[in-house]
Length: 349
Ligand code: SF4
Image 1 (cartoon, protein in one colour):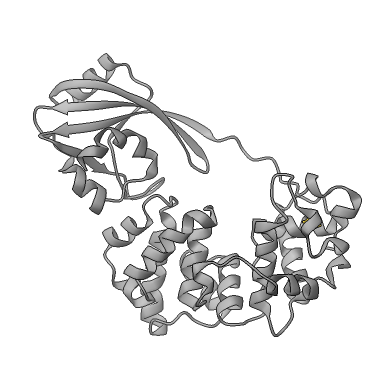
Image 2 (cartoon, rainbow, N blue to C red):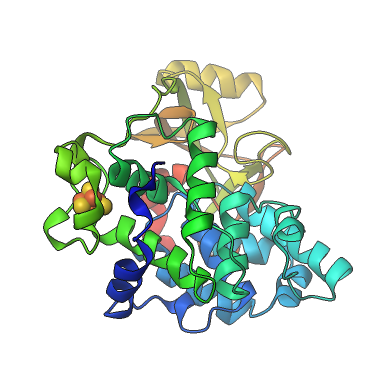
């Protein structure tokens, strides 16, 4: 980053002070509130997070409450947010904070950074917003703003670029308001300097400092290194029913959606006869097999392209746990990848 931003803080903070979004976690930015909200906001839109955040704080109002919560409770509160390793790390870190720091998050960037699931950005957000420490919080939104302000075509995915931006913002940060400075940058990225070639420059408080705007390159920025294409995985998902109950199984303890409940599935897109054969080979006694509408789910590195079958069984086979549709809805956290296949039993829940 060049020096064009040295006058950034004053107009940015004045704009932030003149009105910003009313977000539930901003009402009382305790370390716990900032932490949980920042983890929820990773990869998820603010509007989607509001309800999750409120329900979470009602059920688990403190680090200690989270540390003592059962797995099924925090997984259920997270259901639909995806990236379940985030909630497992939240719990793991809460246990560690209770054991090492008496239940209070440490007011130290390095100690925060050492907790499970807390990276540079989250540690910076907690340190600056909750503790007033002069640490930057640089995520993809802030990198986009930085690249446009400087009219810089270096890929923002470049680690050296990110390091330079962190150093630059650390130097620019007003000593008395580091948390507001970081939040103002985030707010600018979220509401004005929008992604996908659509910055709203006419309403931008730092337009006069922005090289991207003055060079006409803002909409083309930022540059990202090309991503590897996602792997496509065809799957055949089963909705097993037996005596009105629904059959579930658990995913392996490691890898994608580790340890979560799921609907059983088979590799590939299978025709009805192939499904019957595969299930007979497992000892399942199939009374009825009905096709369900196909569905697709996108993860970070893989896409599941799923066909589905409703499978009526005469006996519950080994390896599945059978629950009523209403218990499934209220007590089991099922990844949203399977939601489309559950719509046929929605009225029963
Ligand atoms: Fe972003 Fe436009 Fe503001 Fe520059 S002028 S920071 S491109 S919104």
